[in-house]
Amino acid sequence: MQLAFQEFPAHAYLDKYYSYVGEENNAWLRAILEAAHTLDRAPERVAEVGGGPVIAPLLALCTVWRDAPRRVGFFDGAPQNLAEVRHWVDAAPQGFGYEAISNWLGQQTSSDITRVIELLRAATWEIEVWDVDQPGPEDWVGMCDVVSSHFFAESATDVPSKMVDYLRRTAALCRPGGLLVLSFMRRSAGYSVAGHDFPATSIDEHDLGGYLAQAGVELDDFAWSTVGVEDPPTRPGYDGMLFCRGRIRIGVAVR
Ligand SMILES: C[S@@+](CC[C@H](N)C(=O)[O-])C[C@H]1O[C@@H](n2cnc3c(N)ncnc32)[C@H](O)[C@@H]1O
Figure 1 (cartoon, protein in one colour):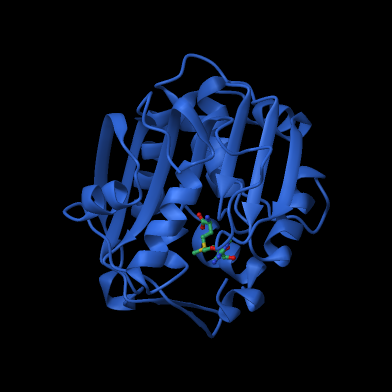
Figure 2: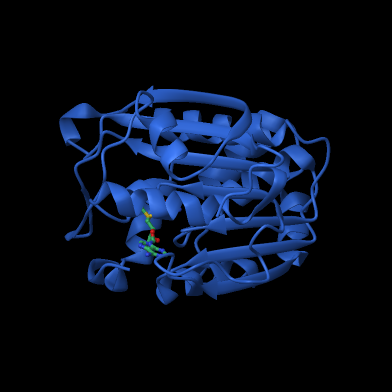
């Protein structure tokens, strides 16, 4: 993991990106809800890779299922991010609130969001440091029904071949036929949070397929969408967002 991430400002990041639902989060959460709808119930095992301090994708999936997976694997390279996740799971007072996102999810799905939060918190969580420069946790590789990873592979490096490695190791957690749900900053040259600068690799809908192929990821039922940046004058460091999902093709294991 690049040094910059050792000081990833977990709480400032949550405040900056997840304290409201604007056009970008609206499109992002919708893409995750649509992915969740491709399953008819909560699966056994879900992993979040490069999850940072953010539980929102898991919460979005669970609002559709109105239930939680039995096991949740939450992985990131920076321990302070995982501490934030632990606070949320424990309903600790210092945990991030997610009010804007939970209210939005409750409204969109007409689900009892308070109950969904209870169910998700009650799952068996394995919250572990995984530096994705290394192979994935043995107990999780090839075992997950759903792997969710957002703004990680392209946001963790400015070296395209490393991004491809991150995509490969993320997808490798999926079982054959498992659902992979990914999001990217579109065409980013890097981003800043609370005075910290982070690298990025540019990716868009035209080169996504090529990068997935390089990573050895072959997907069935593939779907993608984009949204433009919601406030261009703020120069956020990307020109939009790119979302995709698909099922790992049976017989084509990702290694
Ligand atoms: C832009 S944040 C994305 C966080 C979150 N997934 C989200 O949706 O906002 C990028 C994350 O990648 C993590 N990261 C960067 N390099 C990593 C590596 N080599 N292994 C694991 N995590 C890494 C950082 O700690 C950070 O949490």
